Image 1 (cartoon, helix red, strand yellow):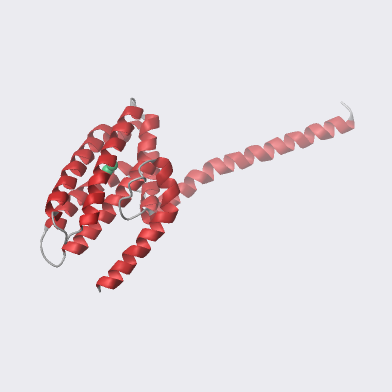
Image 2: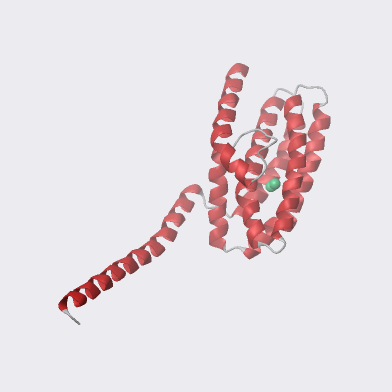
Amino acid sequence: MGTLTRQAALKTAARQSLAGKAAARAATTAPARSRRAMRALGGENVVDLLIRQHRQIRLGFLRAALPGPWRRRNFDRLMRLLAVHEAAEEAHVHPVARRVLRHGRELAARRRAEEKHAKELLIALWRTGPDGAGYLRRLNEARRAVSRHAAREEREELRALGKAVSPLRLRMLGTEVKLAQAYAPTRPHRWVNNEATNKLAAPVLGPLDRALDALRRRGAS
Ligand SMILES: [Fe+2]
Ligand SMILES: [Fe+2]
Protein backbone atom coordinates (compact mmCIF):
# COMPACT_ATOMS: atom_id res chain seq x y z
CA MET A 1 0.00 0.00 0.00
CA GLY A 2 1.48 3.38 -0.97
CA THR A 3 1.83 6.23 1.57
CA LEU A 4 -1.04 8.23 0.09
CA THR A 5 -3.41 5.24 0.13
CA ARG A 6 -2.45 4.44 3.75
CA GLN A 7 -3.13 8.05 4.80
CA ALA A 8 -6.52 8.02 3.09
CA ALA A 9 -7.41 4.72 4.82
CA LEU A 10 -6.35 6.16 8.21
CA LYS A 11 -8.46 9.29 7.63
CA THR A 12 -11.52 7.22 6.70
CA ALA A 13 -11.08 5.03 9.80
CA ALA A 14 -10.75 8.15 12.01
CA ARG A 15 -13.91 9.65 10.47
CA GLN A 16 -15.85 6.42 11.03
CA SER A 17 -14.67 6.23 14.61
CA LEU A 18 -15.74 9.85 15.28
CA ALA A 19 -19.13 9.27 13.64
CA GLY A 20 -19.59 6.11 15.73
CA LYS A 21 -18.75 7.99 18.93
CA ALA A 22 -21.18 10.79 18.01
CA ALA A 23 -23.95 8.28 17.31
CA ALA A 24 -23.29 6.47 20.58
CA ARG A 25 -23.32 9.82 22.43
CA ALA A 26 -26.63 10.80 20.77
CA ALA A 27 -28.14 7.43 21.63
CA THR A 28 -27.26 7.81 25.28
CA THR A 29 -28.02 11.53 25.69
CA ALA A 30 -31.32 11.66 23.73
CA PRO A 31 -33.24 9.34 26.10
CA ALA A 32 -31.62 11.14 29.04
CA ARG A 33 -32.83 14.47 27.62
CA SER A 34 -36.34 13.16 27.03
CA ARG A 35 -36.40 11.73 30.55
CA ARG A 36 -35.40 15.15 31.93
CA ALA A 37 -38.10 16.86 29.80
CA MET A 38 -40.66 14.31 30.97
CA ARG A 39 -39.72 14.89 34.60
CA ALA A 40 -40.15 18.66 34.09
CA LEU A 41 -43.58 18.13 32.51
CA GLY A 42 -44.69 15.47 34.96
CA GLY A 43 -44.15 12.58 32.51
CA GLU A 44 -47.52 11.00 33.26
CA ASN A 45 -48.38 7.79 31.42
CA VAL A 46 -50.80 8.73 28.60
CA VAL A 47 -53.32 6.06 29.60
CA ASP A 48 -53.53 7.30 33.21
CA LEU A 49 -53.64 10.92 32.02
CA LEU A 50 -56.54 10.40 29.58
CA ILE A 51 -58.55 8.21 31.97
CA ARG A 52 -58.10 10.88 34.65
CA GLN A 53 -59.33 13.53 32.20
CA HIS A 54 -62.35 11.35 31.35
CA ARG A 55 -63.27 11.42 35.05
CA GLN A 56 -62.85 15.22 35.10
CA ILE A 57 -65.07 15.49 32.01
CA ARG A 58 -67.85 13.36 33.59
CA LEU A 59 -67.68 15.54 36.70
CA GLY A 60 -67.57 18.67 34.53
CA PHE A 61 -70.90 17.72 32.90
CA LEU A 62 -72.50 17.40 36.34
CA ARG A 63 -71.08 20.76 37.48
CA ALA A 64 -72.19 22.50 34.26
CA ALA A 65 -75.78 21.40 34.98
CA LEU A 66 -75.85 23.05 38.42
CA PRO A 67 -77.95 26.22 38.55
CA GLY A 68 -76.59 29.48 39.91
CA PRO A 69 -73.91 32.05 39.25
CA TRP A 70 -71.16 29.42 38.68
CA ARG A 71 -72.89 27.78 35.73
CA ARG A 72 -71.13 29.91 33.10
CA ARG A 73 -67.70 29.29 34.61
CA ASN A 74 -68.35 25.55 34.91
CA PHE A 75 -69.63 25.45 31.33
CA ASP A 76 -66.55 27.27 29.98
CA ARG A 77 -64.23 24.93 31.88
CA LEU A 78 -66.02 21.87 30.55
CA MET A 79 -65.93 23.08 26.93
CA ARG A 80 -62.26 23.92 27.22
CA LEU A 81 -61.35 20.57 28.76
CA LEU A 82 -63.34 18.69 26.11
CA ALA A 83 -61.78 20.67 23.26
CA VAL A 84 -58.15 20.24 24.35
CA HIS A 85 -58.70 16.60 25.36
CA GLU A 86 -60.16 15.56 22.01
CA ALA A 87 -57.68 17.65 20.00
CA ALA A 88 -54.72 15.90 21.65
CA GLU A 89 -56.29 12.45 21.22
CA GLU A 90 -57.01 13.08 17.55
CA ALA A 91 -53.53 14.44 16.84
CA HIS A 92 -51.36 12.20 19.03
CA VAL A 93 -53.14 9.14 20.44
CA HIS A 94 -55.37 7.69 17.70
CA PRO A 95 -52.52 7.80 15.14
CA VAL A 96 -50.38 5.65 17.48
CA ALA A 97 -53.30 3.28 18.11
CA ARG A 98 -53.82 3.00 14.36
CA ARG A 99 -50.19 2.00 13.86
CA VAL A 100 -49.52 -0.32 16.78
CA LEU A 101 -52.79 -2.04 17.70
CA ARG A 102 -54.29 -5.08 16.06
CA HIS A 103 -57.27 -3.78 14.05
CA GLY A 104 -55.92 -0.33 14.92
CA ARG A 105 -57.25 1.23 11.72
CA GLU A 106 -60.83 0.16 12.40
CA LEU A 107 -60.58 1.10 16.08
CA ALA A 108 -59.23 4.58 15.31
CA ALA A 109 -61.86 5.10 12.59
CA ARG A 110 -64.66 4.20 15.03
CA ARG A 111 -63.28 6.60 17.67
CA ARG A 112 -63.05 9.38 15.10
CA ALA A 113 -66.64 8.79 13.97
CA GLU A 114 -67.82 9.00 17.62
CA GLU A 115 -65.78 12.15 18.15
CA LYS A 116 -67.27 13.70 15.02
CA HIS A 117 -70.80 12.94 16.26
CA ALA A 118 -69.99 14.28 19.77
CA LYS A 119 -68.46 17.40 18.22
CA GLU A 120 -71.71 18.18 16.36
CA LEU A 121 -73.58 18.00 19.69
CA LEU A 122 -70.92 20.12 21.42
CA ILE A 123 -71.09 22.78 18.70
CA ALA A 124 -74.89 22.95 19.18
CA LEU A 125 -74.35 23.15 22.96
CA TRP A 126 -71.70 25.84 22.57
CA ARG A 127 -74.05 27.94 20.39
CA THR A 128 -76.91 27.53 22.88
CA GLY A 129 -74.72 28.49 25.84
CA PRO A 130 -75.61 28.07 29.52
CA ASP A 131 -78.25 30.82 29.36
CA GLY A 132 -79.96 29.62 26.17
CA ALA A 133 -83.27 27.77 25.80
CA GLY A 134 -82.85 23.99 25.82
CA TYR A 135 -79.42 24.17 27.49
CA LEU A 136 -79.97 21.26 29.88
CA ARG A 137 -81.38 19.05 27.12
CA ARG A 138 -78.39 19.72 24.86
CA LEU A 139 -75.98 19.30 27.78
CA ASN A 140 -77.50 15.91 28.55
CA GLU A 141 -77.35 14.79 24.90
CA ALA A 142 -73.68 15.75 24.70
CA ARG A 143 -72.98 14.10 28.09
CA ARG A 144 -74.43 10.78 26.93
CA ALA A 145 -72.49 10.79 23.64
CA VAL A 146 -69.20 11.83 25.28
CA SER A 147 -69.55 9.30 28.14
CA ARG A 148 -70.25 6.42 25.74
CA HIS A 149 -67.30 7.45 23.60
CA ALA A 150 -64.95 7.76 26.60
CA ALA A 151 -65.98 4.34 27.93
CA ARG A 152 -65.29 2.69 24.54
CA GLU A 153 -62.01 4.55 24.24
CA GLU A 154 -60.88 3.22 27.62
CA ARG A 155 -62.09 -0.33 26.99
CA GLU A 156 -60.97 -0.81 23.38
CA GLU A 157 -58.10 1.59 22.82
CA LEU A 158 -56.37 2.89 25.94
CA ARG A 159 -56.07 -0.42 27.79
CA ALA A 160 -54.74 -2.09 24.61
CA LEU A 161 -52.24 0.74 24.15
CA GLY A 162 -51.12 0.29 27.75
CA LYS A 163 -50.18 -3.33 26.93
CA ALA A 164 -48.77 -2.79 23.41
CA VAL A 165 -46.53 0.22 24.04
CA SER A 166 -43.45 0.44 26.28
CA PRO A 167 -43.74 2.38 29.58
CA LEU A 168 -41.21 4.96 28.36
CA ARG A 169 -43.15 5.57 25.13
CA LEU A 170 -46.41 5.84 27.12
CA ARG A 171 -44.85 8.54 29.28
CA MET A 172 -43.43 10.34 26.25
CA LEU A 173 -46.88 10.23 24.68
CA GLY A 174 -48.35 11.65 27.91
CA THR A 175 -45.89 14.54 27.65
CA GLU A 176 -46.81 15.09 23.98
CA VAL A 177 -50.50 15.17 24.90
CA LYS A 178 -49.90 17.71 27.68
CA LEU A 179 -47.86 19.95 25.38
CA ALA A 180 -50.51 19.74 22.65
CA GLN A 181 -53.24 20.61 25.16
CA ALA A 182 -51.33 23.71 26.25
CA TYR A 183 -51.92 25.39 22.88
CA ALA A 184 -54.91 23.49 21.41
CA PRO A 185 -58.17 25.26 20.45
CA THR A 186 -60.47 25.71 23.45
CA ARG A 187 -63.82 25.22 21.70
CA PRO A 188 -65.16 22.66 19.23
CA HIS A 189 -64.46 23.26 15.52
CA ARG A 190 -66.37 21.10 13.05
CA TRP A 191 -63.66 20.56 10.44
CA VAL A 192 -60.81 20.07 12.92
CA ASN A 193 -61.25 16.36 13.57
CA ASN A 194 -58.17 14.39 12.56
CA GLU A 195 -54.40 14.33 12.98
CA ALA A 196 -53.57 16.61 10.04
CA THR A 197 -56.23 19.28 10.63
CA ASN A 198 -55.48 19.35 14.37
CA LYS A 199 -51.75 19.80 13.80
CA LEU A 200 -52.34 22.45 11.13
CA ALA A 201 -55.10 24.31 12.95
CA ALA A 202 -53.72 24.32 16.49
CA PRO A 203 -51.11 27.09 15.94
CA VAL A 204 -53.80 29.40 14.50
CA LEU A 205 -57.03 28.44 16.27
CA GLY A 206 -55.42 27.83 19.68
CA PRO A 207 -54.20 31.42 20.21
CA LEU A 208 -57.34 32.82 18.55
CA ASP A 209 -59.69 30.89 20.85
CA ARG A 210 -57.62 31.87 23.87
CA ALA A 211 -57.69 35.54 22.89
CA LEU A 212 -61.49 35.35 22.48
CA ASP A 213 -61.77 33.60 25.87
CA ALA A 214 -59.75 36.41 27.49
CA LEU A 215 -61.93 39.08 25.85
CA ARG A 216 -65.10 37.32 27.00
CA ARG A 217 -63.76 37.01 30.55
CA ARG A 218 -62.86 40.72 30.56
CA GLY A 219 -66.35 41.57 29.24
CA ALA A 220 -67.98 39.46 31.94
CA SER A 221 -66.01 41.01 34.84
FE1 LIG B 1 -61.82 10.88 22.25
FE1 LIG C 1 -60.88 10.63 25.52
